[in-house]
Image (cartoon, chains in turn brown, yellow):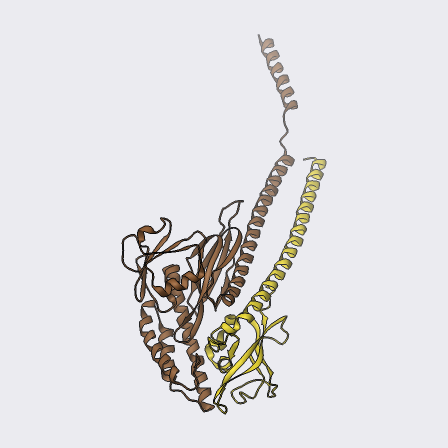
Length: 330
Length: 171
């Protein structure tokens, strides 16, 4: 009996030892190779992803600076009202950001190009900043084309050129528009603008801009204000286009920037009036210019434009009577 | 562990180190090339911006004379630009330029830099001069206008606006 048990036990040991010889030896070498290999693959994937993102960032930044440069040229060429177009190779988002902090505030433009790899829309990269541009558009314009026109803004002297921008997919339907606005916009010959007398005749996907209060209007234009998105945007002169085409936040910020510029320009005119006085052609405009400068610098919202318009009108009347005009020409 | 095994691990470690070093060097060369290309691109963009700006100067309200004359600029306002503090504080950021000056060409005048004391008997008005050696310049011919009290009318003289774009920083 005992002999049989011993034989079975020795048989089992033999079999086990045979199994061990055929088994896989998982030593330190293998463990080391797997850990290091995994680390290398992880680093390679991480580096590739980072590189792709970096390239996208570079591409977006270059596009933003090119766009900014093109916008500078557009301002030059479009003093006479014409529609201008900027074409992108692929679907692109233009981010319009306005900051009114500082002496003049600034305009920032950034771009994100649609990508087929990874995230469809990457966060916009570096911003192209400008202190002398004023772009009135939505915060984000998406499309293959950016369309725009430029109008001067005078109060009473020229303060800046306003760039009014939209994308090719946005249509505007102007219902019962004033003759001035109709004439200005018809010259552009834009396929995005439609003029009608009845809001029912507007295309469904278009933004309805009504010059009277009616049902179904997206934007209502009144004598000195534009109502949109439950907000009132007050305007004077060509600012009406800014109020119609831009987001309310962008509009309010740009108006503040424009008034800061107006304030600084009036300081230039104060210096000019002093220089002219020394050369024998004095004007009595200095007190009005000083008051205008102070009011414009303090402007907090477009609703305060009314007070500034009055001073501007007084200055314009006085300037017209001068032998040596500070601005404009007889 | 046997000494042969240890040797294998050491070999593997060296190979890994060599691979990492190789890829590190390749990455460094790649980034150096990309950076160089970016710097060039930035320079071109900056010059394009300056070219566009010099053509646009006449329509900028700080320079513009009247609506009727599209090539005229206002000498009085340009001189005032030198002295108004708000512009002085931010002039480089505001114009995004390293150099901006108006040089009078005809009729020829002496007098050098225009200042309150010698104006209008001078021939150059420098608004920005950030450094002595600025890069490539762009210029545009303009009519430089001001009120002349002796003639009791506005007079315009031939001049040119000279600008140099902002240098691309090596940061």
